Structure formats: C-alpha cells, structure tokens
Amino acid sequence: MPPTPTPAPPHADRRVRRTPLLVAALAGTVAVVLAAFWFAGFGGSAAQPLPPTGRVVAIDILNFKFTPAQVTVEAGTTIRWTNHGYVPHTVDFTGGSVNSGVLNNGNQFTHTFTTPGTYAYICHIHPFMHGTVVVTPPNHP
Image 1 (tube, rainbow, N blue to C red):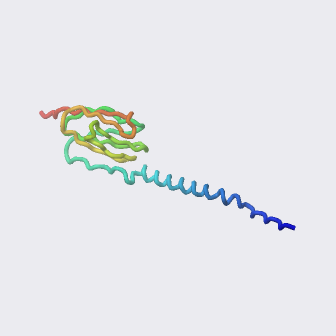
Image 2: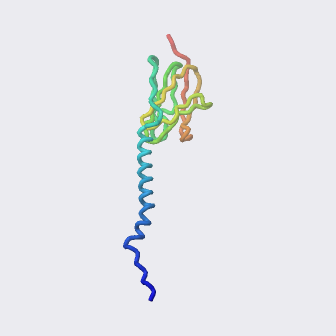
C-alpha cells in the first residue's frame, strides 16, 4: 500500500503571501519617512541672509502661485521668495541667470536687483507658475 501523503502544515500558504506584504509595508514606511524629511526641508535650499541695507520686498509661494505675481521695485531692492506650501517649487529667471534651486516648505530665496529692466521667472517644477519683477532706476532726491 502506498504511503499516505503528509498534509501541509496549517497556514503554510499564508507564510508565502506574507512576505510580499511585509516588503510592501517596509517600502511604504521608508517612502513616508523620506517624504517627511523632504517636506521638512532637510537637504533642501536653506534661507539666504539678507543684505545689510536696502529695501526688501516679499513674494509668497502658495497654492501654486507667486503672490504678488508682478512687483515693481527700484534698483537695489532685494526680493525674498518664501515657499509657504507643502509642495517644492523653484524661482528660475529666463536665461538661467538666477535660479533658486528647490525650495521646500519654509525655505526662502533672495535676490537683489541692481539693473533696471523687466525680469520674467517661472517655477521650473510647475512651469504654469509665472512671475515678473520690473526694476526701475533708483529714485534719489
């Protein structure tokens, strides 16, 4: 008489299915931790010191907009962009002369405009976001 096959231990099939679930859970946890570091600004652009003198104008980055989208300032004015949202953005001027790098939540970027002219910029990550800085000659009495 042939031997009777030994039945598989109970839940043997569950062990095989658990491994992919554990790997997926671990990968998800790692992704959440990395995203938390990204949005907290670790490894992002740091705030830049402001110049000791001169006027400073603030532009906020929030809800996929530069606010205000257009500013008119005198030559010598510093613009400070601050990302108030949780999505990374950039401030990139046409021609590549000025580039903020990635600005995470709370990061700031400053640039002092010394030459009169009109300067258009976009968010490189979200090119539908536009802004303009119009620089006029200094008005000294």
